[in-house]
Length: 241
Image 1 (cartoon, rainbow, N blue to C red):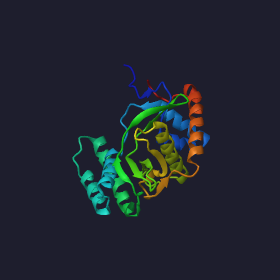
Image 2 (cartoon, rainbow, N blue to C red):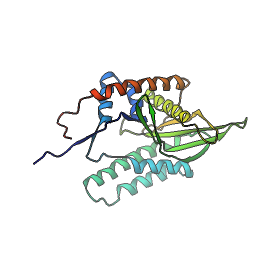
Image 3 (tube, helix red, strand yellow):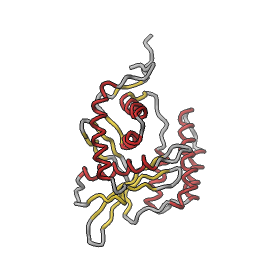
């Protein structure tokens, strides 16, 4: 009997914006671990915070992001019927996320702009690395001089672990840089203040810093290193393909 497969090897270098931000702020050991996770993906389903993220982004768009509303949604998710143990655990982690966010949502002050639903952008190829980019919200505004500006918000959450501001700033720099690479059809330009990473644990907003352009240039250079490193990253111990 053949052993059960545990992982899938991704042939082409691929990384998400979140992992790229973690990579930029990580030690050499952390960087190797991140690239390994991106190249060798477990077949077993991973716990996701999708329902919590949808709840939060929808509440901001509708103007209903209040502690009571978020807590009520957390209670609903926790009480949902589950089809199996994994489904039950998924409900728990999503409810935990929302319960924590309910404690801090009142302090979240989003920029004054039109709030639109998020979207998944086509993967951008940078120095041989595909970067996946799926912000939860899109921002648009018109300046006093009638210039069109846009940005996007991404959510981060790790139970009990506030987001490292360095990671948050790198992620927001990536948002700013990637939006600039998309060449928006309406002629608008990305604005640093509208490129935001929101920490679901603390409610902190990390906007793209003044160094966003150079940060993104460094991220591009890191992509070349990732592409070069990709073929030589060893598989996890005991992995079966």
